[in-house]
Image 1 (cartoon, helix red, strand yellow):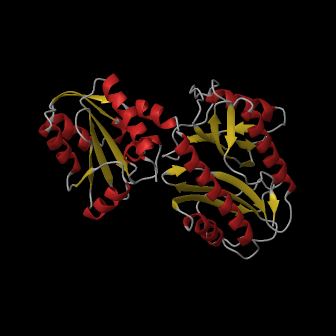
Image 2 (cartoon, rainbow, N blue to C red):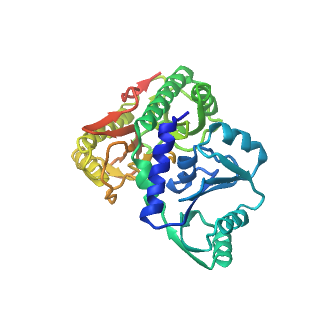
Image 3 (tube, one colour):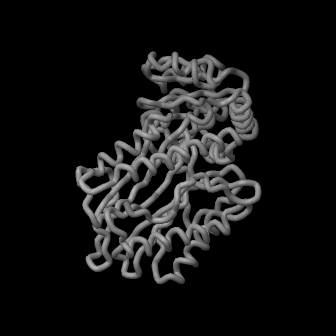
Length: 375
């Protein structure tokens, strides 16, 4: 649970957005789906997890914020865990938000909102019900606040990364010939879930990785495929702890080493190390990618997307890409997982983990080995 100090820090930052953008209100919309950065604005401000459909918190300059949820069963939980004191059940959120705004004398002026979270139906209802309101896109301002993680948030990210490390160790104990991908996922997720992970996003694949046949690990959700000697396994291990995502990507060989996969994984690992030379305050995200690409070009392999993503309350709060001009600042969390291809484009692999920008450089949040293990 976050402290009162952390709650007030967030509320102060959001009130500053209201002041600087001259807003009469700010609507933050949450969604139960796993998505990009636009889903997390509500969670960040309220410390409340949306579990079904959508929720909205209306933030005001002169009044307490109001959180609308779609089930009465959540009200007690919101009262116990959330930063918001006034939460209300709603069968029609968009209509109740309009009613609240009018009750508080807001029928004109500027209201902030994340336009990407507005369905066409909601957008039409708002504009027809409040024709004098100017709807202002404020999401990027929210992201500027969200990316500058506090010490409390950084501590949560470290705990989440430790869950990922433990999940990887649990998987290593399970991986053996005859075990299915589902069984591996069950054990690695059991580790983090039993220690407080509220969600877990896992991708996995297994196959006999080979340059000669152009065979890659089929990387997606788990299947009933059972592991065999000579297989290689690729896992994306992503627990969410207290609302914050971290990710660990690792490859494992089954029964015997696969020298081709190990060689490519080593290139990938060393690309990250080169990228980390640029991973410090003042540099841009694209500088990190450029450093990784320059190194991979010397190896005879190719570096392609995806390279990774900025993370926090949402798993993807921005892409690591050669076009990303975002300046790295202390507190920003980034998952680096560059993808390396053979020169003919037939084979590929990737690896990576979560890093935190610090005042003088970076902190590797995971302690798991970056060597390819054979079990």
